[in-house]
Length: 288
Length: 276
Image: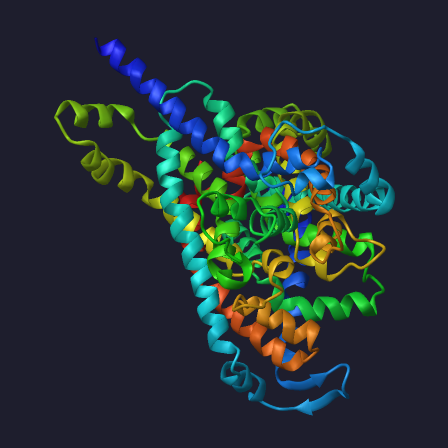
């Protein structure tokens, strides 16, 4: 029923948001593409001309590239595995009848609201420090030698810190999804004598599959670009250099903008592959 | 009999859930407790949990020595400013998409979402360069703009979802009665939309407060918010656990409290309505 008048008014109201986001997307993206084809060293000679695909080749053939890919995969995969599995279990637990449910929920989601620099530093110093950390005390209590977490077991430590931050997110979303499960269905299955594991496998898990997919996709997008957790714990040392951290170092620390930009283009392509799947699910939901 | 069994199960559930909840919350609790210890007690072996001399000394030291107030003020201005700016731009956009949808509305919404997926590190240098050229490096206004832009898709989406739930008939009735567009927005839509706008505001203040890529890379001494202030503790000198804890507690307390109010909006806001 919208009139011609209200349509043009609507377009006008949308314009600021659309134009701003278009600019935010296109301007830096064009610049990154532009730099990626140049030898550009701001501190050592500046713009040294076009080099074609040289940066792209050099980025993937540098000795730091493959280790950074492996690190990224371990961190993203490890955190996803931990948060999804524990998230499902926690969501089921929190969905049971109990006293003080609201309070427990508040405790569980709290880590999500802690700023990344705080959680990284608290874990690094007060828990993982080999001399004074709480984990060192715990190890000594059981007669073991304290572990130098962030150097000897750097990747598991970072996976641990990041999982602690993201477990609340997974739990909260899966809990929301589980609450929409028809409890009569579960009760009927229970009456028919289906054991708990089968009820979980045939009813609960299929019901959660979409929420799990959404959790995986959204977390992947955020996890691909974790920064502060590495920046304040290891600074990329001890094999914790992810792809985004490597690009950050190329661009800002060694000021090799051309090379870093080529890496940036790879990161953008990678993120877009994940994004396509997420957008499909979200788009389907818009139609419904 | 059946009642006894459920009662027993409830006790088991409660115990298990509280144990897990406290375990997950423990690092935060430990930080808060440590902030009230002296530096010597903070590293005591074996660690002390509650039986220490509670002191507020660390809070005083942090406030005095590190100019904490300025970082706090920067955080408030940047998080608050970027959110308000974002809401001002997003409300008209979400309004028009919800009430005057066209064939392209869905595509525009999805496209906006896709800008959120752009990895920050991929555009770090261009933004850095633009900030230098425009004199925005290490300024609050510069960060406000960047944080507004990265959160704008979420703001538009959340508002769109809320506005969609306002029944269109009410608007049509008002139009029949001869209400102009302006009157429609001010007298009917705004009152109905305020709860949705409020929760959008809340979630985005949280996201902007905790953002730790741009705030670390685009600020130095002048505009650094609390994220950067805390990061400066990563290369400390001497005993500092209690002070680190006090600084951390102050940095996360306001957001923890706000966050607990926004649990419900969190799910639909962060999944773009894919999970409700």
